[in-house]
Image (cartoon, rainbow, N blue to C red; front, side, top):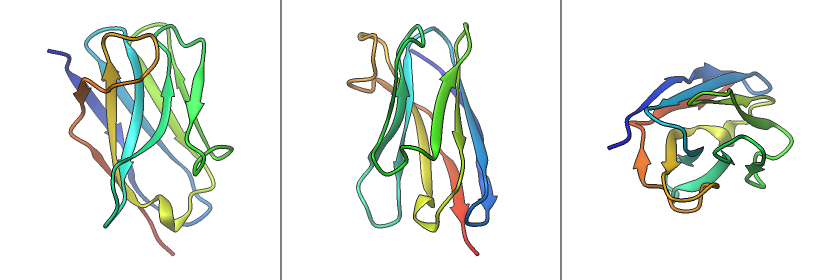
Length: 116
């Protein structure tokens, strides 16, 4: 079992910033998905196991940036937030692939609310 500890999230105004963090109990490909109200879960961003490559969903590209250290923690810097970014954000890991292809474990989720 891979344990995921998420932190961050909260409330921000449009145009503001928040930072999410996720620490796994091992070094794996990591990333975030989100579930906006009334919508299906969607991909947000991911980073490969060694941090060599990053991927961002089209809806957040240019505003969000995923990163990781040399250990097991990933960060999602969320800038220029929009009201449509309001969602529950779930950290995820893929234990079998160098990139996040099929999430195997999920964090408990953290709420992000963007409102004016």
